[in-house]
Image 1: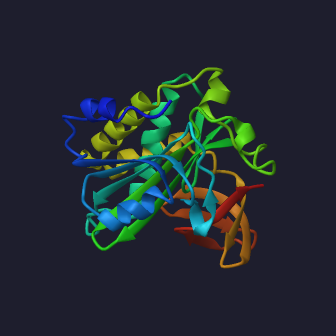
Image 2: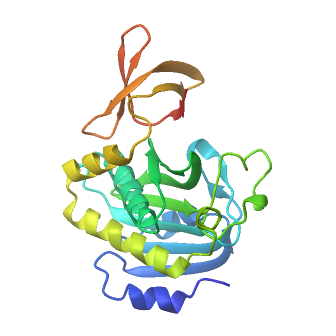
Length: 247
C-alpha cells in the first residue's frame, strides 16, 4: 500500500519546519529533486527510487515498502559545523526507531544499525546556505529484494519486529524529532546523544580515504562532528568524511 500523503500533511500541519511536501511514486532520487527545488522546509518523498544515492556516489537500493525522503534546511555555518547536521538527523532517526522496541546503534558518520546490520543511511549535500539531507530507511522491505551480496549486511524494521510498521507515523515522528532538535540546535546535546548510541568509538577501525587505507583506534568525535583516530604509529588524525569499517 502506498504512503497516505493526506495523512502526512494532516499530521504535519502545525510543523514549524516543513513548508512544502512533494510526493512521487517513482523518481531517480529524492535528493536530486530536493536540490532542484531547494526551498527551506521542503520535504520530498518517494515510494521507490531508481538511482537512490549512497555515500561517494554509490547506489542506494530503494524498493517499495521503505521510507525514502529528503529534507531541505537552512544552514547556520557561522555557529554550527556542517557535520553536526548529519549527526543530528542520525540521532533523531535512532531515537524514533528505538521507541519501536529495537536496540539501535549509530555508526559514524551516517548509518543506523540494528543487530550489526544497516537499517538506515543518511546522505547530506550542501548547496550555498542550504543542506539537503536524504534519509533511506528499510521499513517494510523484504530483504530478499536486495542483491544477494548485501543481504547479510542489511535489515529492515519489518524483519526485526516480525510485523509491518506504519510508514506515515514513522515518517512524521522522525520529522518532528528532527524539527525539535533543529530549532534548538544544542551542539552539546547532539554530540552527547550520538556518542551514547555510537558503535564506532573505542574500536579499532579501518578508514578508506582517497584510496588510502588508515587503521587505528577511534577515540572520540570532536566538537565539529569529526572522527578522531589514533593510528598504530601514535598519530592523531581527524576525519570529516570517509568510509569506516570496524575491525
